[in-house]
Image 1 (tube, rainbow, N blue to C red):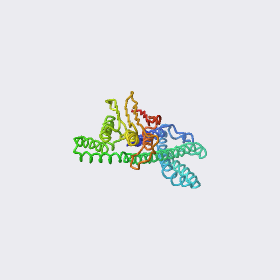
Image 2: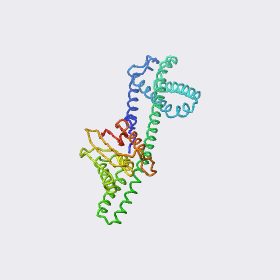
Image 3: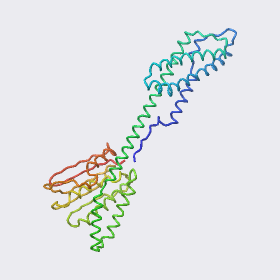
Image 4: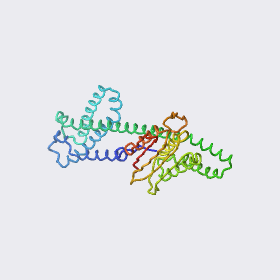
Amino acid sequence: MMTANPQWYTKKWVTISLHVLFWILFFVSPYLIRASVEHDSTFHPEDMLGKFYAALFLNNLMRLALFYLNAYLFIPKLVYLRRFRQYWITLLIALILLIIWDQLIYALLIPGLHFKIWIYVLFEMPTFIFIIMGSTAFRLIADKIKQQQRAKEKETENLKTELSFLRSQVSPHFMFNVLNNMVALARKKSDLLEPSLIKLSSLLRYMLYETDEDKVLLEKEIEYLNSYIELQSQRFGKNVDINATFEPVTDGFIIEPMLLIPFVENAFKHGTGLVPNAQISISLQLRKNELHFCVRNRYNETAAWEKDKTSGIGLTNVKRRLNLLYPDNHSLQITKEDGWFSILLKLNLH
């Protein structure tokens, strides 16, 4: 069944790598804060530079902490709850604490440095705003991606449920008709009973096991169709002229299981019984990567078409399956003309 394929940027290792890269660049970038301090002339520049970068490193650890506090605490606990006033107050307190922390670190490591507070704040604000905006963007984008993933997973689960439901309805009335035909053959002690049972066993094996797969080989789907048609031919005998032509397929093409059978089932449902000169024509061809599947049957234009409640999924539901599974890779033409009901399915097989 179809699964949601996460984009490369949603993978955990990619996220971690991007965060590590961002903070490496942030820590090694030139620091504007150097312009906001002045030093005592008793310090040698090269001695102070090492201490300055050590202090700057410790200060940037606080900015790193602010980034993730804003992303994982302030935004979900304040912004998402529409507590905007508390959020702005929290950011103001965070800015004040950063200034106090910076002053404390520089006082401990480089006692001779003196802050010009207004210049420091002027140069600190762009970094502070950058951290807050980057953290907010990170949280919003991450939540948006998670929301899209949950919606995609929900859509996929709904699709799985719907397709399972559609598959479970395939051909129930056909099985009853075949079993009734088997009973008739048994009563007649016909030699056709054993090969009919073998074909029926093959059909059941395909329906019970192969249809659990996302896709099956086209050859297996054709084998199923052939077995189905042969059983129907035994059932109707000479009362229905059946012509089935399937082009040999050996290229390993795959297809959604039980996708073609509803068209054939529909032809036998409406092309037999009270239909004069009943004829059913079925053909399958491959033209490069495109499957051409044509089913035609005569029908009684004067007879009322009564819907059989056990008729399987019908054409309406098979259209739904095609739209779900091959939204841009199929075309389906249905026509009624001159006593013939025809469908032509063109399916692009990848």
